[in-house]
Image (cartoon, rainbow, N blue to C red; front, side, top):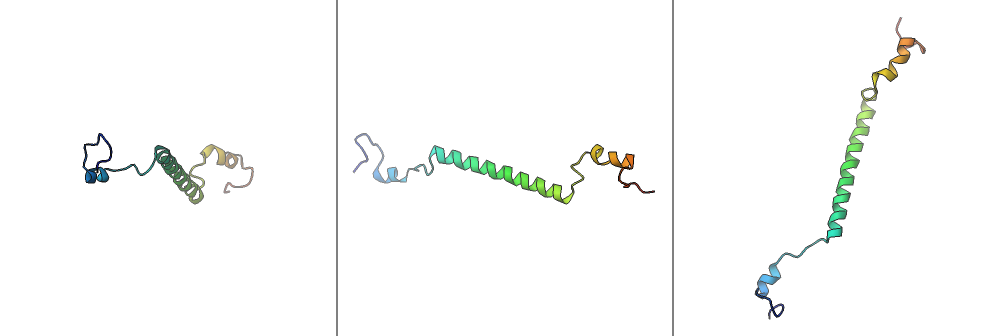
Length: 77
């Protein structure tokens, strides 16, 4: 009742050995999908931060230049 001619394990012990559930390609695909979800989560958080406070991520030189020139009347008198 052994598994093969050179098997030294009893049938019950050989049945209890862990078998690989996922192949190497499946594990690599799961890692890749997990990394994509991490990148997607970072991008979603960054987009919400920009939506909530759009001027924090803008350099000050781009939105204060026209205020100094008084081109659009944004400066208070």
